[in-house]
Amino acid sequence: MPTYRDEVVVLRTHKLGEADRIVTMLTRQHGKVRAVARGVRRTASKFGARLEPFMVADVQFYEGRTLDTITQAVTLGSYGAEITSDYASYTAANAMVETADKLTESEPSLQQYLLLVGALRSLARGEHGPALTLDSYLLRALSMAGWAPSFHDCAVTGEAGPHSAFVVQLGGVVSDEVAPPGTPRLDAATLGLLGALLTGDWQTADASETPVRSRASGIVAAYTQWHLERGLRSLEHVERSQTTKKVTSP
Image (cartoon, rainbow, N blue to C red; front, side, top):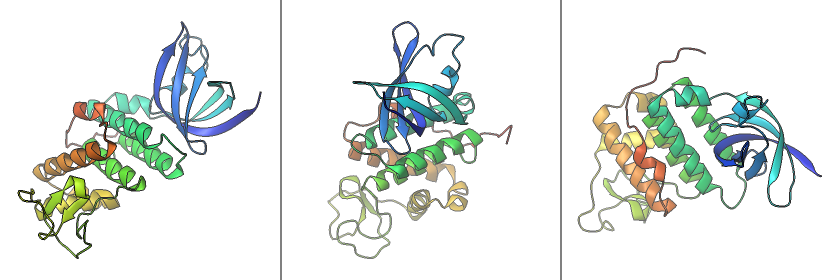
């Protein structure tokens, strides 16, 4: 049977029979792939631990009629243990992989793959607060999918900002002329943090205060849920701790 190799990040797994698993992966070149990993639930399995959620691996498959089968797996990024040992990081990672799962339904996306791997690596290393890392990931993933929010110029007319009226359904901040009655207003600090998270300005993001982060997280959650339509089940379980996990190893 035809075989192929690809780099993957594991999104989720499901039990199959007594010893097998179905592994859902986002790959670097082939988009989202569901494949059977034979015997990985046995204690003697050679690569069971390499195919847990949040792990990055070099995987060899052979093609099947309905599901491909995993024949080899070599670890490239061992992020699972570090992420699952910290509840805030674990809940953030779950929201990330669910988002990636929904955004890559139709076609491969190298950008989405690289973004997810980078976000999981950052979580595992404790580079920033888990909530900040998640919010940045969500904004950037949605932007790559064609739903880039505007936090400065009017999302409807393009009128130069700054503007403070924020409407999720219209794509971000809007000018007073097009803002519906009763539109909520965002303060400059919250808009500044949202812009920093979108562009990867971590110096600004890490220096933000807790109340500002909380307001920004609410906006990111609302924006994400609206554009994904079905919403994210894992988002409601996210631990919005604003602390940075202490790194114990390089």
